[in-house]
Amino acid sequence: MKKYVAVVLLLFFGYYLLLSFLQLDFGRADERMAVSKDYLHESVATNKVANVITSIVVNFRGFDTLGEVTVLFLASTALASILYRRNKPGVKVPKERILTSASHLLHIGAKVLFPISIVLGAYIFIHGHLTPGGGFQGGAVIATGVLLMILSYRKFHVNHNIVSWVESIAGIAFVAIGFTGLIFGTSFLENVFPVGTLNALMSGGAIPLIYIAVGFKVGAELIGLLDNILLNNKELKQ
Amino acid sequence: MIWTLILLSLMAVIMIVATIVAIRQKDLLIAVFATAAISLGLSVFYFLLQAPDVALTEAAIGVALTTVIFLITIRNTKRYEKVNKAGQCKE
Image (cartoon, rainbow over all chains, first blue to last red; front, side):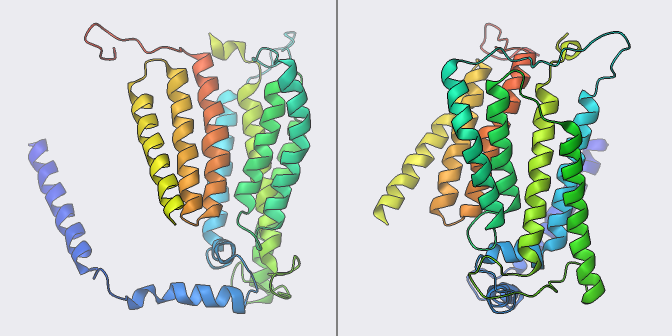
């Protein structure tokens, strides 16, 4: 009986999916796709942003980006709550990582590469409105640099308080910029800041500000996540 | 243009081989590195198809962070898959 119900339901859904699929006319210009032309024109003419993708992600689809950042935050919070250990009174938890110590080559290489990766990540999210990249990419590059340090030095530690403060302040800044649009303009995340000239570093109004906030938030989240996973956890291993 | 095509086909071949290795391999460490190779090829694909934004994300997250998380998981569990005589995985 169950099988027949499943087959009938599948046929039903399949019929409607096929119906909507057949309504697409392939190979012909579609009036419903005209919004993409508008995006291409508006991001350069009104927002003065050279990188159209950033303009779409942060301005036209800014609310989606806020949702993405929230999902990432929820994921890292869930992981932290799984890996959380209550410190037993009297038992001193060693503040060392589960990794064995790395070779001399990795020590020196990590020391050289760590500042470069931090600067590269910051460059990527500050210049998000001019060159490819943005907050997510820059934050991930910074987290990769910190990961290199964590892998090479057993006693390298990130201050969890600072990381969570940076994360919270960046998240609040994103929402605050959104509310500025609501207060001085007409809608949430509207670009009300002065936009400047095309191709300048100080251009695009709220877009670079939002991407800098996203960069800090993603970087802090990923760093906190990696530090949580890599801490010495004897109870987890058993 | 022709070089782009050659590079794309090379990357496609590498990705297919890496996928087969990742599925067939019983040593999970090698399987994880094959997954990283798929991400690397995909990143080159994105870059050549003019989506550098996505290529950056794929390179940072797919190649570095995901691989490390998988490696830590393997470290805390088991490195080899158990197989029976017929070559299938045990439940």
